[in-house]
Amino acid sequence: MSSYKQTRVRQFVFAFYMSGIMSLLMSGIITLINTGLTEGYFHRWGAAFVVAWTVAFPLVSFIAPMAGKMADWTMARLFSQERRPD
Image 1 (cartoon, rainbow, N blue to C red):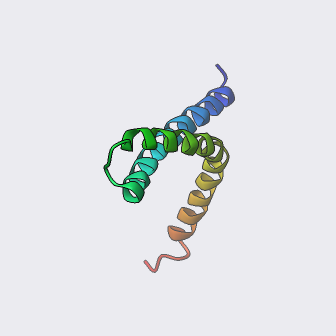
Image 2 (cartoon, helix red, strand yellow; image 1 turned 135 degrees about the horizontal axis):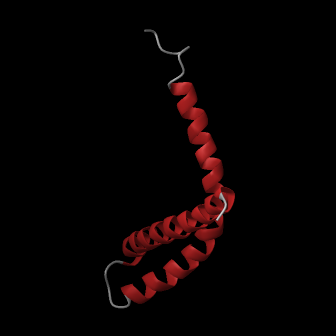
């Protein structure tokens, strides 16, 4: 597999896991805050998770590369030699 193709597959796999984990945690916490741990909580959580992941996966796929570039830009400015008073 070419390096380019491997990088693209890694981005897809990363987006899959990141969006899934974040959607699971966030939908669970928000459902708990909004409705409490009452009867039907897990059903409501599951429904909220499906909606959240449906939205999160394409967003993470699109935003993760941009966020990485923003992080690189920030780190370059934070740790550039010009800013360090050594």
